[in-house]
Structure formats: C-alpha cells, structure tokens
Amino acid sequence: MSKAYWLGVLVLSLLMIGYSNTQMSRGLVGDPPSIYNNMPGGLTIFTGMESLERRVNAIYSFSEVEKYTPRNHALLVVGPDTSLEWSPTLAHWVEEGGLLVVMDESPNSQMLLEGFEIHAGSGRVIQEVAVGVCNVGNASIRVVFNVYAEVYSTSRHEVLCRVGGVVTGLSRRIGGGEIVVIGDSSLVINEVLSKSPTYGNKFFLDAVTAGRNLVFYEGNRLYSYSSTQSVINYIKGFTTLATSLTQSMYWSNPVQRTTLIIIVIAVTLAIILLEFGSPVIRGRKY
Image (cartoon, rainbow, N blue to C red; front, side, top):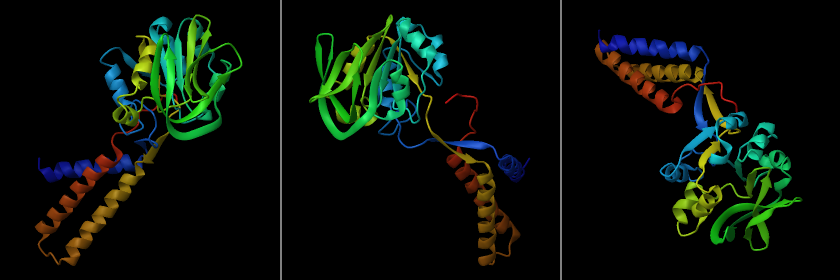
C-alpha cells in the first residue's frame, strides 16, 4: 500500500486517541531529587554510581517496603514534593532491622518523622551553601550542604552532622533498626556531585548505609499531565496552516498541494510524539 494510505491511517488513529481525552504524561514537575531526573537537582549521577556497587530499586508506596529484607536494605526518602503521612508498615520494617534515611529541609516529611520523635524542616530553612562536618564511626567527613534546616529530637539520639552550631543530621535507634535524618535533600544531587567532587557527600552516605542495597521512595512526586485533546488542536492548527500556505502561494497543481499538506502533517506528528511521549500507565500510588 502507498505511504499516503499509511499516513492517513496514522492521522486517523491520532484523531481517535485525541478524542478519547486520555491523559498523557509530560514528566516531573520542577527539578526534584528524583532518581528519574537527570537535571541538576536529580539523583541520576548518584544512583548510576551506586548501581555499579549494589542493587538500587524504587518503590511508590510505603507498603511496598515489605518486599525488601530489613537488615539488607536502606530506604531513602529524598525531598518529597507533597506531605508524607505516618506509616505503621514502615515503622515495623525499621523495628525489624531496616535503615530509613530521610533527607529533607521542607516540612513535607514532618508528619512521618514525628512518629519517630524527630523534627526536621519545621523551623528556619538556611538559604546558603556551607561546608559541614559529619561523623560516622571514627570518620570525620567534610560535607557540602546546600539549603538546609536544623534537625532535632526530644528523645535519645546521636548527632551526625553540624554546620557551625546547627545540627543538620542525627540518627535514632528504633527497635532493631535505625533512622537517619539529614536536613538537606540536595546532599547527593547531580549538581553537588559534579561541582564538589572533593567533598565527602557520597562517601558519607555510603558510610551511613554501610553496604546495604538501596531502595528509593519515589512516591509523593508531582507530575504534569496533558490531555490527548491537545493532539486534535495540533492537527487542526497545522492542517489550517498547510491549507493557508497552498492558497497564498497560488499552487494550482493538486500534487504540489497534497505533497505540502502531507509534509506539514508529518511534521505535526513528529512534534506530537516529541511533546507528549507515551501515555501514562495508571495504578501507581503516589
């Protein structure tokens, strides 16, 4: 069959998809510390390096943590976009020997942390880049902090990090496990690791997790969506443009007009695919 026939079939299919008003993903909102974000605020450099040394996985609901053996895994919660709620499942996992690492300067982790008698992000956020000192075992590590908050606990705990006189990191034993809280979600983001390789940010986090496999919590992320109704608008707009061009140029040859319209439609399809990507698979818990 001719190329024009298959192009027509593709256009018809896109029209049907467009009128179905299906949601299509346009990716993460902003520049969050996500393992799927390769922008300056993402974690792709860190996870790429870590995946060479140990397993790296992701979960989208705290209920999924039960799939991972507590004493062999560390769950990392890094800068969630929306507020986290207390999770009895996660608390039990920690008590059974799990390691929970929360890195956040915002109030979004506050409800979760209060269940462990820890407070972070509820006070003043310090908008500066500063070098602090973190202690793990007998090691004293210089770490770069970038927009950070004080963390504290009214229960027994161990101070891990300070920037001047501000406590920016602590740990608490919870049953057979441990929770580590750092008041900075940018500790190992792409920008920090690429611009500050002489500091021990990655080394500190490696020392804290002590060879455990890593599980990142990717729930509570914000995503932008666009309806496939926009596909109809693209096709209508570019078809109108093609028609206007052929009329304004006084192309009397029908073959030339048809060729131009096909070219414009092909460009439209390419733009649609680049702009919207593939449809979102629903069902994940965020």
